[in-house]
Image (cartoon, rainbow, N blue to C red; front, side, top):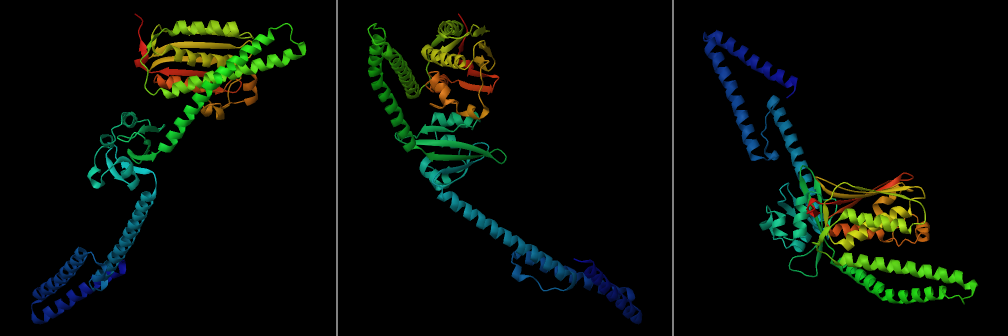
Length: 431
């Protein structure tokens, strides 16, 4: 309502009251006539207000009452607001309809969860992958419907940075990939994907690598043995000793790669966490230090810092392999005169084993990929030093089997630090 319309309404009302007063003076009943006119004005305003309320209750803009002046302007403003609301409502419904159609067309499952992990909505693919039943499952906790222990643990930890792949319930050959994405205020978006084909391909790859490595081990052993025998024969032509030694070195390198491939295949094939026996970490790293100093060809200062006598519950062969690979890696890239520190300690978060060196360091862009199979920061230097590119992959899988994690910190020219973090449940106090 504008100021002009307000003043017009006030002016008409005052004019009507003035006319009523003059007529009342003529008949000698001025007060009565003015009261009647005021009552009539009030009745009219109430009538217009009643029509406005009736129109608003009908929620139809085409049935707007016909009124002039300030009331007509007010009705016009309300009608414009109503039309705007209707437009935005239709637009929102259209967007929601398009969103539902697009999510329904996604081949991956999408489930919307509230902070309590209760289902708010899911698309058709999620219903098929998780066997959800329309509105009957809306409002239920998703971990009551998907009862795989790996998924339940993943959902309850609150750390969704790494997805989880589980074998579907009741379907022995189906594997599902779960990824939770937090959004909004505590809301969760659960993405589900069928990765059965990828899982089968990965299993085929593991089987192929394991079988091929196993078949290669025997011929390489024979070749290495014959080359060693020939290299020790004094009647061999001196011109051939260089090539023979090189062949022997390459055969030994291939044997080491086959050994690492077999070990990695065994670690990947074992899915359950091992119980194991208490391992004396102090004695283990002491042996590793002695073995390293006996083999390295350049001077190194290898220090031990054993700050706890707690034993580590696990498979000693796997822990030995993991720690040995970390120590070998540090020695390989630490120049003469450098130092390596092995530290074992515990705190409220569990047990920690660290290998810290003063070597050449690693650029930041390489760190996320160091545990990939055959990944090399410097391929030429790694091959020259006899590395297989599998050491850190073995470390990662051995630690994962024991519920532990590997943390890598490094800076070029400043050395590297490899930390193994074991959960408190893996620590056993000495007897």
